[in-house]
Length: 199
Image 1 (tube, rainbow, N blue to C red):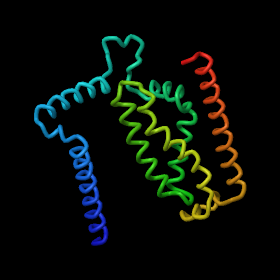
Image 2: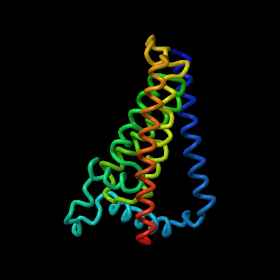
Image 3: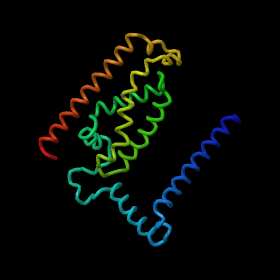
């Protein structure tokens, strides 16, 4: 119990230290923000932009473009990064990797990050910008690459025999390769269409 309490205390200290470093970085790189008037103007501009991100220009939205829901976001995700089936596969890969295999720690970190950012995008961000999707897309692709690790050495730590079997490794590798190849082909076709349209 004492060790857990010390670990939590250290975690809280590291979090506070990180915040102080961030604040210090902002002050050093933008010392003009110390002037009350400039800070007020900057904050007002930021709040206005946040409202646009969170709500979108609802008055102009006649096609549901700025609706905040998963199906709406997946349309844009599929157009820029990955189709719905690969999106769910990547999340499943991270969830499975968090339970089995030799990459539990990194899978849990990536899963926690993707869940948090995805919830914000899907339910709190009306604006659909491909840059907003990058913080989710990159770790999801990494997570999908990690899927075969569920069959590696420490996969049996939970007392399950099936992840370490040869047939399981072959199936997992085949599924991962097939889904990656299909998504790669789709992305290359989209890039080609962009190129011939000149956009």
